[in-house]
Amino acid sequence: MDSMLDERRDGSGGDTLVPPVNFSMVEEGVYRSGFPRASNFAFIETLNLRSIIYLCPEPYPEENMKYLQSRNIQLFQFGIEGKTEPSVSISENTITDALKVLIDVRNHPVLIHCKRGKHRTGCLVGCFRKLQNWCLSSVFEEYRSFAGVKSRVTDLRFLESFDVAALRHNLYSIIYQYQGYGSKKRRLLYKEETLQKPPRITSN
Image 1 (cartoon, rainbow, N blue to C red):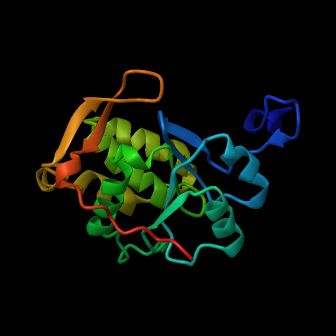
Image 2: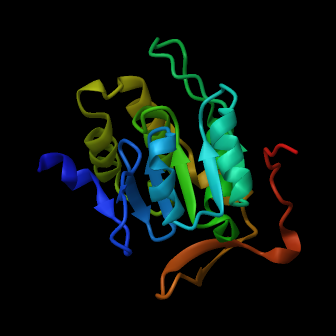
């Protein structure tokens, strides 16, 4: 019975839909998880994704890439090493580039994932929360809720030091507006006239 807490059935009464490990909604139109497997594709289908933000340096598996291409889902890859050594830190520039994709609502619905949906995904979501003016204690609490006993001090230090003010300054073309999927929700959106589309990682 406990395993059913992480599963749900489609509306037709067909096969059970199994989400990727550590799947959760960040906010409407923004999701996070560990690496999706083929067994998760039916569940992913229900999200109606426009894009995926992939935070690992390894090439995207061919099976997953074919699935994205068949559904016209764009893949944005930002290679962040998953090392645990204190000397290996996350690049602030890489996180900033990923945030630019994440906050552009034209890429929504979007799924953020790394390998297990804990550390790299947690850092990107944590920086997104800081951009949403969450207090640091709440950012840490959310990070720990996914990382659990494997929470990394280096990640927490990165989240604490990440300069949101500088990001807001660099993204002066972003405006707040009410735009959502069936509900009024404050979101961040690039002004069309000043936006330069970030590079998309695609295959022919």
